[in-house]
Image (cartoon, rainbow, N blue to C red):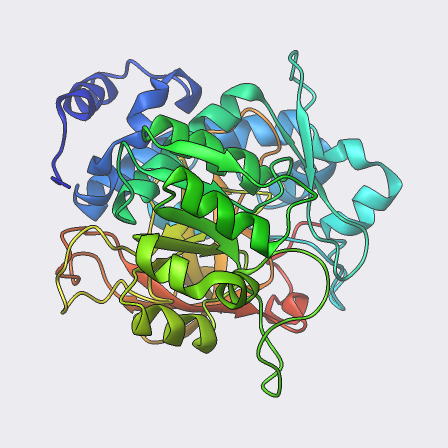
Length: 400
């Protein structure tokens, strides 16, 4: 794959600099699929996203008042007041759960009324996608058709970084009604890939037969943690290890790229793909924001850092951060420092998340421009759940 700042993105930059776009929703959707986002200098990238975030901040206060109005008014924060990224870093964090310091958290608000998550200026239909709710009430994200188009177009950028190309044939075992499953197939469509979806009654043996019959060469599936004493997970569903058991020889012969999502890439999966000489890729995302980061397999550079669980940040349509707290302010964590994953939904009609902490730890492994693969964005690693995520945020850094 050739990495370049394409003409469409150059035109977008010229229009942006002349002030053509008042909101990020006016940006042509195709721009979010440009590889230029990971090639331009970090300063330019942040200037673009900050300018669009100004509009989103002022909008959030008006259209999601239960979450943002009081907290931002108390701190005298406005979108127009965001002149620099340092101003942006003073935005308080949005958290899921209440803190001992008195921060309410969105989950308590959702218990009272789930529609606090739906911007009140929306005039169009929305899709509702709920978080896993592992610690209580699932939090809903309201997404419009435009939001899905923007996100799946951006995901197609990650798809190309993962070495998947037009003409490939992909089999997907994901639930197609899950937000990730829906945008996955939409991103593959945009990348020119033929998609075959798993039916609910198909078992691992059926999938292996379909892979053989249809010449599938890209497999999208999942593999969660396994018990060290077992060869594979038990229970319903289809995952990688069940597919390997049903037809590992077929997978090794036919599958050119294996995509595993939903979990960290576990040692068992890494070991099997290495033995099969098969690229193993993943993409970080959630019901609240897709895409966030990806590893790569579009070239054979053995010295690149963006492999396994080391992921290049995908810049736009969201702003992805790894942050730490200093004196009540969330600032960027330095390379090698433990941090917290945060994201801001910049180009979004539906539910607005400003510096949202989903409850994941992360660390910056490489800064901008330090990877040899050709992509310039920073690389994050060690993404994992924090047992008590609200405890990492102290007074002054939560929406209440």
